[in-house]
Length: 98
Image (cartoon, rainbow, N blue to C red; front, side, top):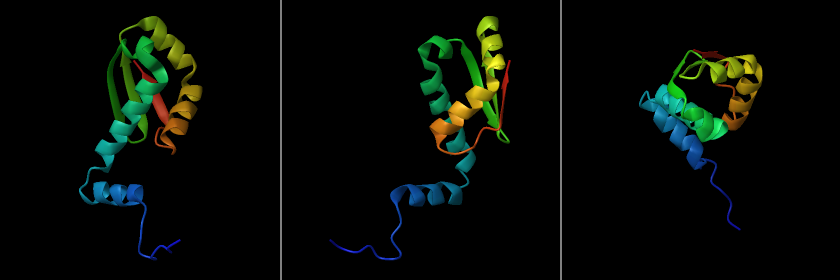
């Protein structure tokens, strides 16, 4: 077995540094959140999702179905826990369903 050099880094760490250096961190976070949302909600909910917007740790979700909007609003805390778990970090601190 070979030893790793002390200056070696994992590819995901290098990738994140690169994204941040080009000022794309926010875009990458939005992409991650969108992917996690679609994975968690599945086709049944995402077909009623008109728009997703992320700003300052708040996720805005515009839905076309009032019943689904109300159900998700009632489970907002659980949704935040689920999406942050899926992301592997606490990016979403609040969610607004409209």
